[in-house]
Structure formats: C-alpha cells, structure tokens
View 1: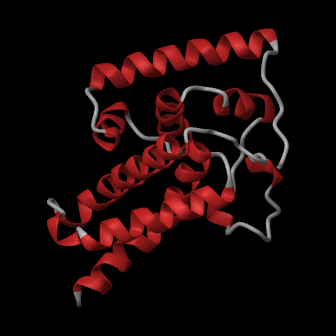
View 2 (view 1 turned 30 degrees about the vertical axis):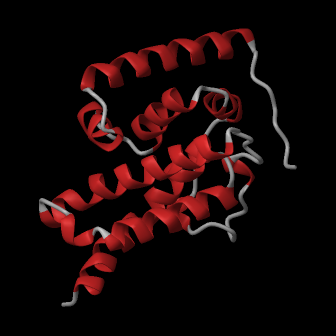
Length: 170
C-alpha cells in the first residue's frame, strides 16, 4: 500500500468528524470546507512525520484541523457564523455528519470566544476526553479544564438569562 493509500484509508473514517469540528469552530459550511481541505493538504504533506501509526492519526489530524481553523479565524479577524447546524437539510450533509444540537445552546456556543468554543466543541460535539483535547489543541490539561469550566459558566449564564443572539445567513 502506498503512502497516499495509507493516508486516505486513515482519513476517510475521520472525515465526517473533522468536518463537524471545523463547522462548529468556524460557524459556516464554506469556511469549514476550506479549513478541512487546507488541513488535509497539510496533513498529507506531513504524513511521513506522523509518529504512532494508525492509532495516532485521528488525534494528529484533529490537531492539524483545529490549528488550521484557529489560523483562519485569526487571519480574517472575524467570526461570523451563518446558519445553524440544524438548518442543514438531510440531503446536503452525509448522515454521519448530521448534527443534533439545541438551537439556543448552539447559539450560545457560537458566541463564545474561539478558545472556549474549541474546547466545548471537542468535548461535547466530538466527545473527546480532556487529555485528548489537550493533545489536539497542544495546551496543558489544566488549561483545558479551566477553559471548559469558564465556557460552561458562560453558557449557563447566557442560557439562563436568554442573552443569545440569533444570527442569520448573510
């Protein structure tokens, strides 16, 4: 099996999860697609540097994707989510990419600062353990715990007071 075949054999089962992560962090379909494409190219080019083989691939790929998403957010100096996950029609997104997210909760998550949003998305949308989030974001475990605590506190306050804003498509 060639390196290209190995890469795509490992990549294909992760594609849906990776897209959901990018969509949740960036807030719209177009940016998520761009981020996933860019991250895939970066990962493919660096595939020979992967340590740990197939077992390490998912975390390694998530880390590349999250870093790509963060770079896109910083480069554009804006976060403008358009649409919400539940607005996707079933025929637009593959079944394994479907998102089941409460509208108010999703609005509140999208309003979080990017560093808090990334932790919440990886923990609750991608169901990662805290240690895996620390690895994916390349930050200490204590920072993950602190950011998650702060994010959950902010989400609770926003949901209790109803201070989420609805953002429409542009």
